[in-house]
Length: 208
Length: 208
DNA sequence: GTCTATAGGAAGATAGAC
DNA sequence: GTCTATCTTCCTATAGAC
Image 1 (spheres, rainbow over the protein chains, first blue to last red):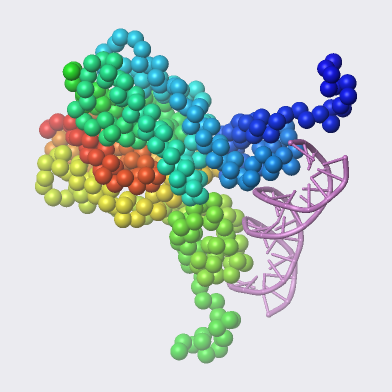
Image 2 (cartoon, protein in one colour; image 1 turned 90 degrees about the vertical axis):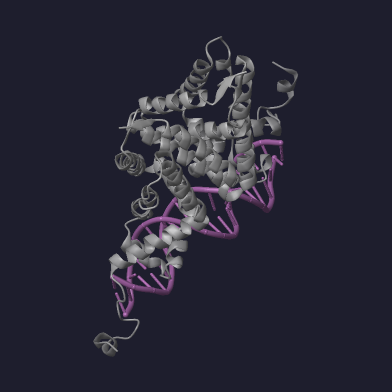
């Protein structure tokens, strides 16, 4: 029994800072949105998911819009550590690329909800706050640029096509294939496309 | 002056069959959704766009859900005549591919709204009626299969990679690049990616 | 079929006691 | 800061006169 509990009832005791609540609400929002879709993620569902009363919402966030911005920021941070491990090991150039694509794909299939959520949030942002959609997309592009650059550095290759184009190409294929799979759930077809793409990318570099 | 107008006032005269109204409402819905987004396309906005009173809605459609299904069906039909003209002329195999990609791209840039709408509708359907998302996607896939098949027939080539994989690859790239462009509006970057992709596809066939 | 008026509910946001 | 109760608004859908 602590000092405070001797003098304050449970109800009187402030159990959590507003900052901690904000964080919990953002994570609860991500769970609700993954499960129910962005359109159905009401403030009521979100606070219920976090086990808090409705009134909490508006002294943690000025508006639902503000929560959505923080959700997008949180998601960006979370998805930056899935593919890079594939860059270890000492296989051939193409093998590393194929390994990276398969690692990404395993990551998608294991837990698809966040990826679907990302599409929905970008869609949503395109209508309501285009700047944050651009910012989010730029972060993803940058991850792809880094992967391609580190890849050539490690293996002593250089790209014969501008890395900027390849990064965009890679991101487009990844998103296109993922979206396709979210619709038809055809895993083999998705892997076949990624493999064909990997062959092409591997042909866009030469030993240095 | 017609026979009916001599006996019926404007208000009494039924000016339009319910079927015609349905068609007008579907087209109005497409315009509103393109402009405001699917989430903001309320029945009120849609009937206003069509210049009809609100009450019309529910003797033309059982529910908003039913309208959405018909909107998806209508959009599918509309987008099936953009790329095929590129298959005329007698250029080289790769030139036809590059021409087809550029034709598609011109089509997107000239009028992006329907493409953005398609993404949103598929997203929406993924949550509420997965079967119609699958159906819609299958129709798009089929268009890509046809394009690739006709292409080899005309030029006397054959694919060295399963046409099914190439069709999926093509669709993934097209959708990925389009989505990317909807976010950042970088036209040159999009064209560069499509061209690089075209080079790859062209290398997946040989003369027969 | 066609329209006006309104039911009925759920959303985001706030008021005000503690 | 915290919570309950409530306001306001806007939605889809229906009732019912014509």
